[in-house]
Image 1 (cartoon, rainbow, N blue to C red):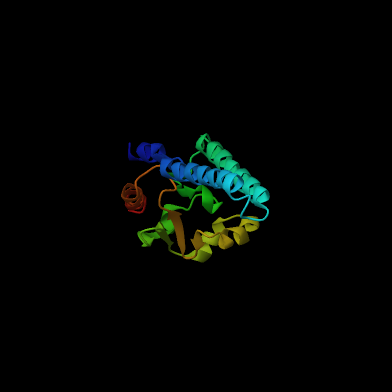
Image 2: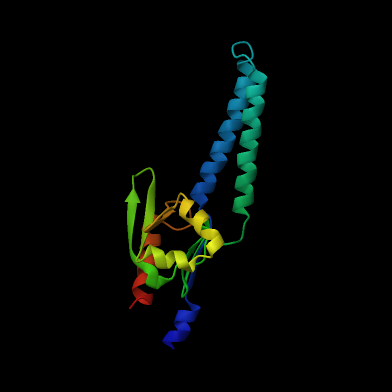
Length: 173
């Protein structure tokens, strides 16, 4: 029975609603700045029209990207019997037995779930050879630590940390 529960264990998290709201706000702000520069700044700012068009195009691009991300049905983070998989790491799931501990790091404005691996060389051998260099260059990978930014998935920060710690305790006993 316990084996069946482990096979069925799967937590999936999608993109964070907060992150989407921030992106919509940023896109809208860029478009608004573009219109203000176009309407008011033409007398004061040289090349105001070009600057305004750049802001509007960038703002529309941010909003379009946000709409695309919000409609993506794929999970951003998965925890199951195989380990932890986070889309932005661009790799296979990190096996539970390779995880030493879970903590938080960063500042109030930029906090992260920090996953510390036991042996970075063993972890690198799990990753396909063609992806190793890309994995090591990832901004969320600073071996022996892997990071998941706050507000990147649709779970409160403390709940996410707790779920990872619970999974780690369950699968490494």
